Length: 165
Image (cartoon, rainbow, N blue to C red; front, side):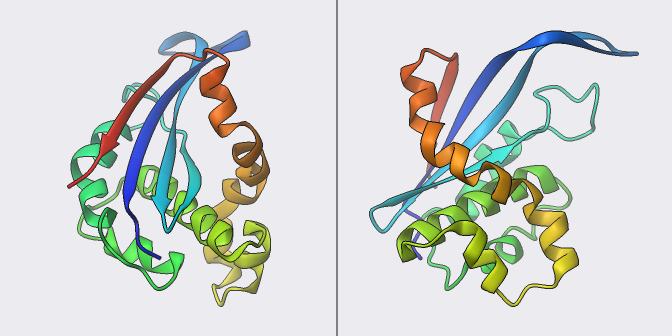
């Protein structure tokens, strides 16, 4: 699977009710959709870390665009499980890495014309590994497939960046 392009899209969705912590109130949820292109197909992943480090120590936009994208764009991977080791040089930042890896699993499934959940279930990964790194993928797979591009058409606030080496 050759990765030709990685795009990061910033989405801001209003919350039905504010979310409050000791750091203040949030009235919307901002997250990233990661879009991988390769072999004529598109795969989607999600990075859910906040855009600021007040609630969690991890942010994702900068890490993905400045450090991780260059490690996957233009590269060929035999299997999506090879993505995470390719990102190992960047320490920590597991939410950013997981977003890219989710998109790689989705891309791989689309290339094969199979459901992502079936591809993951058939893989040789240990169940704990699956639970930790792909928990969101199976839940979001169909939503991204159905609504990914539709979110853009519906006028959701989006910042788009084509990250290439």
